[in-house]
Length: 469
Image 1: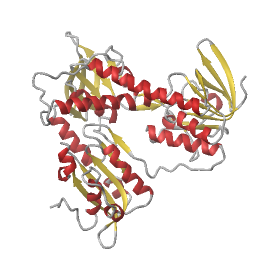
Image 2: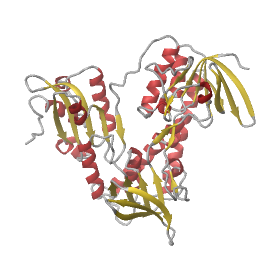
Image 3: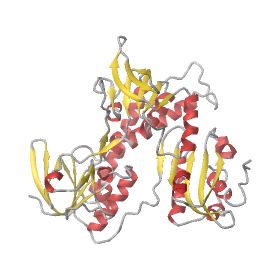
Image 4: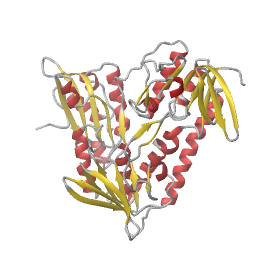
C-alpha cells in the first residue's frame, strides 16, 4: 500500500480536479482517482466540446446570413468533419492542460474505479489490477449522468443522449430533441444553425430555470428561425418508420401527434451519480439520488465529504469547482461554509441568456418591494455595430423609499456575450452594490457592457440611450 494521503478525491471532473489543486496549494498530499479521462463530463462530453460547436455554428450562421461583408452565394457549406476534428482538438488541449497541472502540483492521479472500503480507505480497480489507498479524508466528486426517458423505443438505435451525440460523425438532416432544457435548446440552436431541421418536445417547460420573459422572447425568436417547439405534451413512444426515420409520438391536449427525425436526442437533464462506491453499506445518507451533505460538505459519516453534481443542488461545473475548494479547505482546518447567494448561470443558446440572483417571480414570492428596469441591445451602439441587437438586460433592485432602485437583487441578460457580461453583475451583488454603484461607474464605449450600466441608470432617473414608454 502507498503511504497515506491527506485527501483522496474520487472523480476528476471540475469539482474533483479543482479541489485537488486547492488542497495541493494548501500543502496537502493529494490523490485523485479517475476511471476515465481527467476533466469529467464538463471537459470531455459537456461544456467544452459543446462550446466549440456553438462557436462553429455561430461562425457559419453569421457567414451565411447575408448581413455581413461575406458573400456566401453558391459557395458555403458545412464541413461537419472539420467541426468534429476541431472539437476533439480543443477537448484534447484542455484536458492535457489539466494533466500538466496535476504534475506541476504533485497530485497523484490513480486510474481506475474507486470504492470506499471504510472511512479513510479506498479500493481502486483498474484494468487487471486493484490496490487500496488510505487517506485522512475522502471527497466524493463522481458527478452526474444523462437522465433517460422511460418510454417504449427509448433504446432504439439513433435515440441518444449528449454522450452519444458527441460520437456522431455526420450532420443529420433532421433531429428531434426531447427536453427544452438548457442542454436541449443549446443543441437545438447549434444544429439549426448548421442546417438541420430541428423539433423540440417537452412535457412542461421551455427553459424553466431562465427568467421567463427572456425565455419567452427567445422561444419566439427560435420559432421564427424554423425550430419547431412544442411544450405541454406526454411522450408516448419512439418508433422506427418504414423509411428509416425515428418518430416520437406524443399526446397534447387530448390529440395525438408526432415529430420525426434521423436521430432523437434525449436532453431531459442529468441525474446525480454515486453508484458503485459502496455508500449504502457505509450508511452514507442520501436523498433520492443525491448524497446529503451539510454546509461544509460533510456527509453523515465522519471523514467522508461530497461535492458537485452528486449532491444535487446547483448542478453546474463552476459550482462544483467552488464546492471542491470549500470542501478541501474545511478538511484542512479553514472553516468555510458554502455560500450560494450569488450563483451565475448561463444558457449558451443563440443568443445567450445569463442570470444571477432573483427573478421577478422570486422577489414577489419573497414579499420584497422591488423595481425592474431594462435596456434593449437594440439601443446599444456596440450591439448594433456587431449585428447583435436582439436581446436586453433586465435588472431587479430593492425599491427605496424615494422610488429609486437600491441594492441589486438580480440581473438577467439575453444577448451576445451575456455569459461574459453577467460576471459584472455577480461581483456587484457579491459586494452588496446598489444600482447607483453600477450606474456611476464609467463603462468603456463602445462595448456591450454599457447595456448593464444603462439598465442600472434606469433604476435611478432613466437610461440615457433608451426611454421606456
